[in-house]
Length: 212
Ligand code: TMP
Image (cartoon, rainbow, N blue to C red; front, top):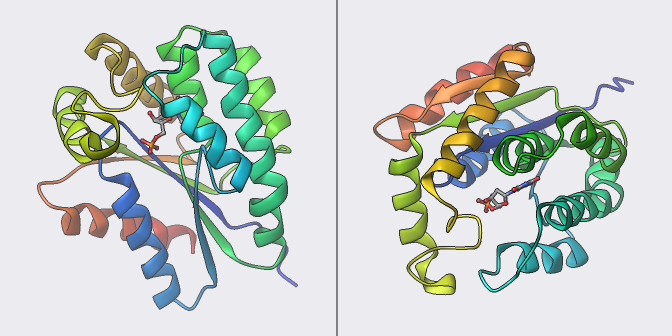
């Protein structure tokens, strides 16, 4: 039996359209005949979704370390409860954000030590590394504007707790992602968001074809 774990992650700045693209990736993989699971971080289980609510609530006051530990707590639960069982059952798992987000947001954005973050990422994810990570690159000023528009129904016009961070913070996050992509060029593919989502999806599908 093929024991390879088909774990694909999608990352991107706020408003990059990654959630829509993740759903289209799932659709494409199913067309190709794969059984799939689409999930997200933080989230994917009852307790991890509860942690997500704390993390994204604009009223939560969190110092960088508690923010990091909450992301890792949600991940530990998600990995054991959802991701590993789905991979073991032979599904291709597509996850909307994963450990690269922690390196970019808590490492580069908040300034926490990257080696320390890598250690926690690896423990919480039981050492699981994606076979492919798509990073959707968008200029933060453009993306944030879109993201805040999308989320205004449930967290007001200024967006969720992370979206409310300064443009300088989001520029650091973008640098962080690009830095991760430079460090792991085989795994992380940078896709610039195109003028429409179909064009972006076309680029993503070409990359997927090289691994699956
Ligand atoms: P989103 O993926 O729906 O945009 O919301 C998740 C938010 O959490 C987003 O602002 C990125 C942030 N995040 C981190 O800061 N660290 C992490 O490890 C993960 C998974 C997400």
